[in-house]
Length: 142
Image (cartoon, rainbow, N blue to C red; front, side, top):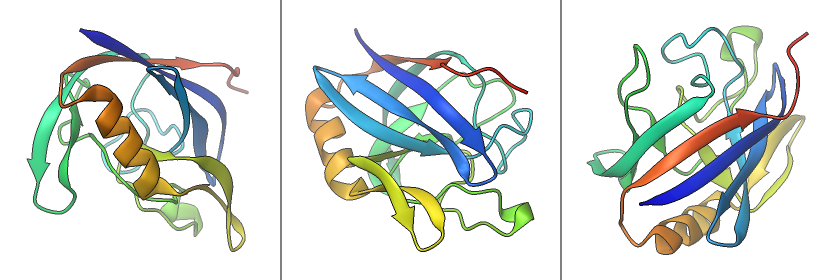
């Protein structure tokens, strides 16, 4: 089974940003800020998670991140923004992982860009096979 590494490099009200390493490719990621693994408002905890394909009515065929404590429905799907909506930032995530080709800005907010092409590359690299997602942080919490 393949292993995919997600390394978080920064976090704040505008989102949690990192990199996703898969099959020699480096994609960028956006997730919600850390709010203690609360459903719909937080990124998931650091850890190792089994992932497999599912059919989402909203996002089509995507990967489901399994065995997240206290959570269901955590997907890897397209989107650009993952800000803290309770603080007025826009979001396309309710706890899911958004891949992109680059980090950048959409208006006044940090974002991942070119999400659809990134998701296509991610899906092609995995070929529909299940994998283990290893999430780590390269920063310390204040």
